[in-house]
Image (cartoon, rainbow, N blue to C red):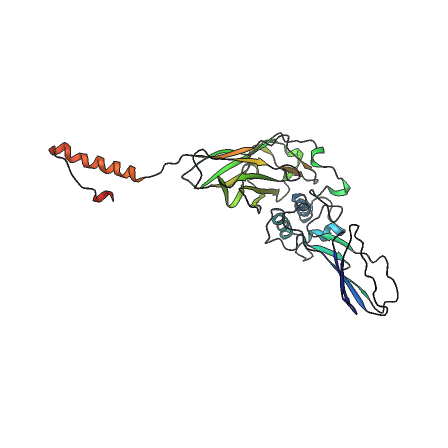
Length: 354
């Protein structure tokens, strides 16, 4: 693995970075000295490619004792909080990491080396083949520790991309929503065509963009609804960015591996109109391109894209606003009432319209 820091301590102090092939060396180490070499590497940033809902579902399957249990490095990678037990705490920590959150992720994204370090007493010559194995906590499904890009692949070395798996769902569409410019919060539904239980779709993930000058999202940006309204976990997070075009990342998985079945609402977006939006202002809602496109995950950890992912829009319409002119009109009507009784013009009387 490249760019691993190896620190030499003991009779001398030194450090070096591993090269592009993962190789390293310390030269001119004094004979007879006592030394310890310790490898370290900075954690993967939350939301980075490599840990996603495929890893979440693999860990969930192990927790539910469904299918072949995790073992070896995969089992170690799944125990992200280091308590030697694989449970829902690990599952949720991985989901939060995928969503780009920095809290509640335990040790997800951190590198773990084996051995932790190597010690040498009274060194008497060159020491070759001083290798270390490593994994990334939370990267359960990958067959290797570090990818340049892209999501985890399927178990067993199957490195097919999602585009090579025939879709079983025709359309997953973002909403076309119109919101009242005088209101703040509103809800819009992401919809799907028919999903059959036999296809065993137990999770999904994806990013889409929006214009924060027109809409943004409530503190809980998505909510389960429709065919995920039962025992499902559906979450979302607006990823860091400078704007005005921002990205919402969403994820969902079945808590008991019961697959999706039905059509219509897949989940809800909980949006907030921007108060400064002009009447008719609109924000396109656009699914991201691979590797962050919308994907379903089945119970065998295969991923598949829908046949079509239409974009949506969120558009501001005029709201009903109370203005001073409206209040003045009401008081003018009140002033005309005496005129009908005595034919006199009522002058002044503007104190009640201040």
